[in-house]
Length: 81
Image (cartoon, rainbow, N blue to C red; front, side, top):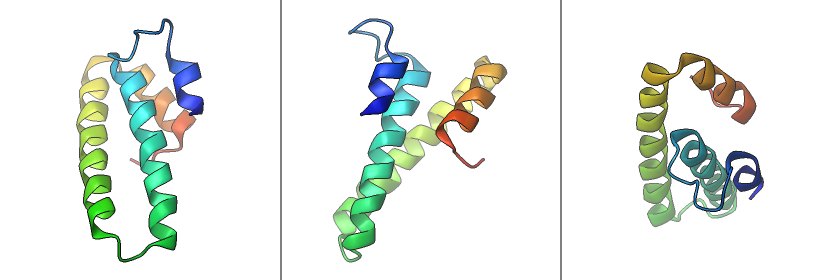
């Protein structure tokens, strides 16, 4: 969980959209690697789709609020948009 170390300023600092996006990206990447080995695991695939949509909504919010931080996050986390 590398993203937790970068995004947290304090231990209780998980409410910021950028930290939530980092956490969702870590979880998405781990589920994605799990699905490469387990192609028929549809419940994990559904969970992945839910996480992707949550992250997309947060990215849309961050794009409206702070465009510079949004572009930095996209390049840092290697997210296609």
